[in-house]
Length: 441
Image 1 (tube, rainbow, N blue to C red):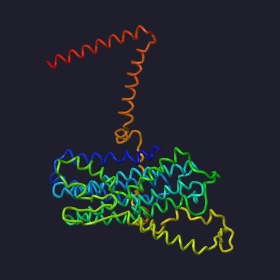
Image 2: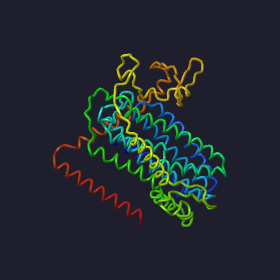
Image 3: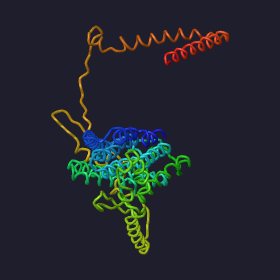
Image 4: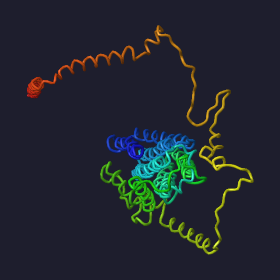
């Protein structure tokens, strides 16, 4: 629960601070454009580094935590684009900043849900390592459904909520690219990394809920987690669906919040920018007519229609179904020996980011530099200077402890002494108040 709370809400305080500073406190100027560009560039860097690092993780909490870095990058990208255009194009500024804030709202839903999902798995089988679990959908069917919904939402798969906010960020990047081509490049990087996000979460829910059954040797009984653990997952998964199907519902509140930071009349009405009908999805208009549209209801109806046709033919064929043991070509293997674990996912992709220079080899996007430890004797001057514990920390601690010991001597356990201290404190407070009042006059 603590991880879900921190990942879902506490990590967004920086976003709130940046939006308030550049939209409410500081005046629009050329410096605003410079900072908007910086925010967008570093946001894209966060998308790249955070998501690629998450892809190679095999611990559920580490995987989800690195994805927080990546998803925060999407918010910074949208807000950076919007901040850049505050002095010149108010409508584009509202769309960009609103897209970042909308993605923040969506991230609260699906990332909190995913941490709850990981917590349910840990509660059930006591494992965070994706390599020691598998096929848990037979134990936790409802948790599996909510995990898949939240995973598809964070990956930006339509018609879930993550797609709607990412779509707005991409549209802001494309429209902003007409004035500054760098934004188009940043948008392309964000689109590519969104595919990496999907790959990462295919690994996440496939390793846990699909494939050969493995419960970390706990022999956990079949049955969902308690209602108090299951209810938040269902509610958050429902929001991932409803915010994706009816995106204007949350966009309306985001628009009101963002435009409230600017002077009245800064941008057009919500109906002129996003469209008036909630059922019709989003219809973007930057002031020169319709430039893009997204209608999740039509897409969802078409998908359900196609699924219905496939289901009809499947049922009409009445093909017999049977379940049998997996055949290993005559060899005797245990399920654990042939189970496709999380470590095997995207191994060539991981090797793509392996760098070798001479004897130095590194895998991943974070540099690892091994330095030979420096050994210093106690008489070495550098040792004395760098030994902060000896010349700073210990004297301060010893002085404070001596003061506390003297202060503790005032607690004698005699009521009359305590009354005397109360009287002395009251006299001191009166003297201070009279001194302040005399200074005021």
